[in-house]
Length: 420
Image 1 (cartoon, rainbow, N blue to C red):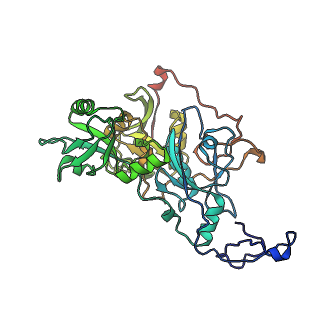
Image 2: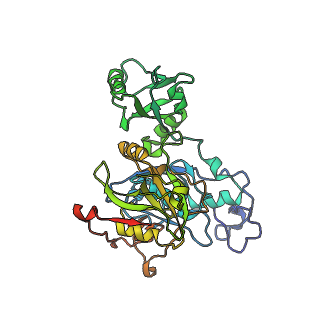
Image 3: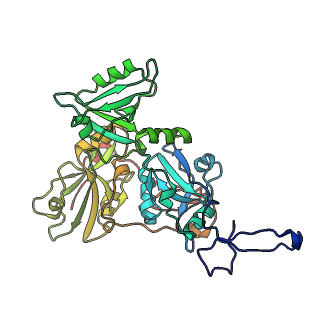
């Protein structure tokens, strides 16, 4: 199916080429007809990309003039994306179960970046995408319903956790939940009839019923469950995809990333940024000495919050000085994403970034980096990468590398702090 140039008068028309045998093989007749049923449209395809920390996903995401949608380009030869089946010209429809076709390009890039080393993409081939748009199809309706698993954090009360588990006798890894009404599990968002996939960040696929019972007892007064509905479990099974917490709906979790927008006053923002070691041993940027009555306190900053992003861009991989420069990039205002110590510890325990589950309900604040052109216009194998100014849609030639500031010695780290 192909659209001819010079016949753009009716943008709703999809052109079909029909061969007329009476005119001979060298002179086929061209007749035009409207494909109003959309039966020729391809189906969305789903890919779960899992990479190592030193790898890339192996593709570029473009926003192109004269081309609708978020376009997959420069699929790296032999790279992860190509091996899984992504193709040049595919249009990205979903990231980790979130429909993104209507979103700003930079926000889509940020969603992929926040996924860390694993991302679930839904794409449609370019021809089917353009045809669906011409027909006025709602692309979101081409995708399955909510197939995300759910991540729930349950706190025990005097009556227990409020759920029970059953499964076929002798079978491993098959556990269905029955949830008591008005109990802790129901209040935590645990759906009755769902299937248990992970307990406290660990898969239960190889567990027997007895082994799982022991794990539940060792959980103490709190536990985190990854569960999926029967429809979601069936979807992932049919596509051969492994369900993990990185793909989950985390809206029921009590641990939330907070967005703080501050306008600077003559006294400053009213907080101190310190570089400190986290409980995991990693280095983080923390917020302390929040001054009463100044913008930081009024925005909701709390002592000990960990800084995650500045003006919509993750500070992952940045050192203290680079973070300070990013905060100072706009002289009179700044937007920070932060998480409190309890939430920070929770996400570390399950090995996921809290940014992965952040939903921006106020897209007007913060900032987005524009897509950048390929250096010198030169061709090359490209990948989605993090530039010196943070995540963005980069076209980076394969041999190119981005320098990382040398780690400071422990005695130097202790002196890193900056008042704002």
